[in-house]
Length: 420
Image (cartoon, rainbow, N blue to C red; front, side, top):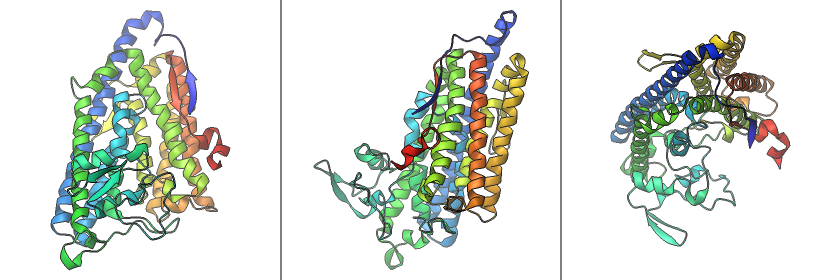
C-alpha cells in the first residue's frame, strides 16, 4: 500500500542563476550518501565478523560466558546495520538483497524446537519443520537432503514456499538460535536458551546440539557473505553506488524515498503502531533478545545520518560531506530548519523509548494492552515519525522531484483492515 505519490517536473534545485552550482552540490550530496552507505555496510561486516568469532568460541566451549559474549556481539552488530536500513525502498539493489539478512517476523519452528503451545498457521505447512531435528524432509514432492547444514542449504530454504515467515537466514535466525523463544509474552524477560543447547554428549539439552551449532555457524557465515556483497556494491565502481549517482534527480529521489518510507510505513507503521494495536510481542522487531528499542533508535539515527551527511563509524571516526541539509538550506532555510527540528524530535522520542527499556520497561511490555505508559512512549515515537515524514514530503516538493511513492501501513492508513 502506498502512502503518497508526489509527481512533479524535472529537478530544479535553486534559482536559474545558481543552477550550475546546485547541480554540483547535488552530485556531492550523492557522493556523501554513497560514502556513508559504504561505511555503514563495512561496519556491519566488521561487527558480523566479531559475531562470528564469538560464535566460534561458543561452539568450541559452550558456557554461560561464551553464550553471553555471542549475544553481546549480536547486539553490537545491530548498531551499524540498523543505520543502513534507510538505504532500502529507494535502491532496488538493496531491496532485492535485504530480505536475506533482516527478514522478520519468523516462524521459529521452521528452524528448531519450540514450546508445546506453539501455534502453527494453516497457511504455512513448514512452520514446524524443524530443520535442525531432521536430516531429510519432503518439499513439493521432492526429498531434501539436510544431513549437512550448510549456507547453501539455508539459502534454499529461506522464505520456503514463497512464505515470508519462513525465515531461515539472517540476523533474526541467528538471534533465535542465541536466545531461543521469548515465552514471557508482554511480561518481563527475553528468550532464555541455555548454553547447553550447544553442548556435546550427555550435557546436550534440546537435542541435536551438533546440528544446532552447525546451523548457527552456517547462518553466520552466510550473513558475512551477504554483507561482503553489499559493501562491494557501495564501494568505488560498485553497482549500487553507480546507480545512485548516475542521475541526480533519481539519486535524490532514492534518498528521500528511503528516508520517508522507513519513517512512515516501515518504522512508524509496521514496526511500531501495528504491534501496539495488536498488543502482540511477536510484532516487535528483535523479539527474542528484547533489543527492539535499540533497533528502532538506530533506524531513526540512520535517517538523520543521511539528511545531515554525517555518519560516526564504530571506531569513532566520522564519514561526512556535502549534505541534503546544506542543499535545502541554500534554497529554503525555513524548510531545512523545520526538517532538522523534526529529526531531533524523533530522536528524542526514540531515546525516551530506549531509556525506559533500559530502565526495566522492555519494549514487549510496552505493547501490553492497558499499559498507558508504554502506549504513550510508542505513540510518541510514531507521531514524531509521521511529522518527520510530512517534512520529507515538503522537501520532495521543494526539490521538484517526480514519481516518489512512500511505503504505507494499514496500521496508519486503514486501521480497520488490521483486524479483518
